[in-house]
View: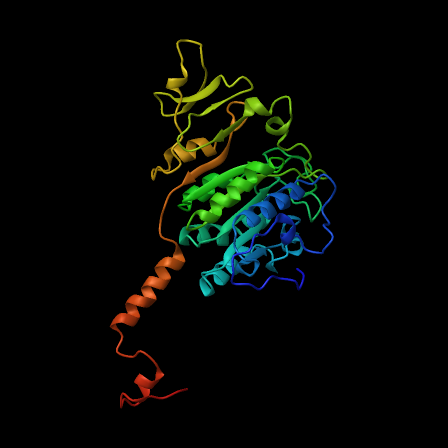
Length: 346
């Protein structure tokens, strides 16, 4: 981070360039992190918030170099503890716009405890979870999201572990906002960062990111030009869940409570039969079904999967302090000194 942070209380029109630091970006050529950085800088410029109101906090990993490349306040913390430190920063200064950066190893392995409790508490911050299904910075070990059977330096015969589904984990921790994007879709990622910022509470944005060195093509089926249209479903609240290269595929709910992919025009199916996305439904069941869809059986759900209003931790904390102050007989130190009570400082 540079020392040129803008200090102004007046509205200022900022551009993405204003959020670029003077540091050389040291990610591998072709790394998906470059696209995410671009998206975040675009989103921050669109928020019309002074730069001193932003804090970018990261843990350890390739993605966690993020604060160096942002001309905002930032904190490159320790492995897995970004959510804990970001929670403290937000609680101490609720006016700050907090963006936390973590990878699938940083957030879901050593940082798994902090990840779920930040969500449970509903701290008002946006967490960008870079999911490339590998440890990149430490040179290619399998991570909590690596697919079962994946051969890596730490699983030479294939990992036998069942991977986490980040959305399932977050929803189990009562996540009120969950969204998903792809590193190559800068426009969608920008939209989701803006949506996460507007949401009061913990906003999780999972970004399917490609590590060109240790797990190249991890998300190829949903990112390759030839196949992506048939394996991506971009959800928008109030719109039907239609996808496909010819926009003729959609989702319906079967009698067994499972989602079914159908083709519009076949077996009497019309577009009116296709489910309408309700991101604000307080019942998490549909969000769980959508977020757990995997290719090739299903398209992968992108966009805002869940966005349900709830009081954030800071809102409840501030209100609690006001409630206690309202009934307290001691308003300040002078009240204590003049009370006539005997007291001792140790």
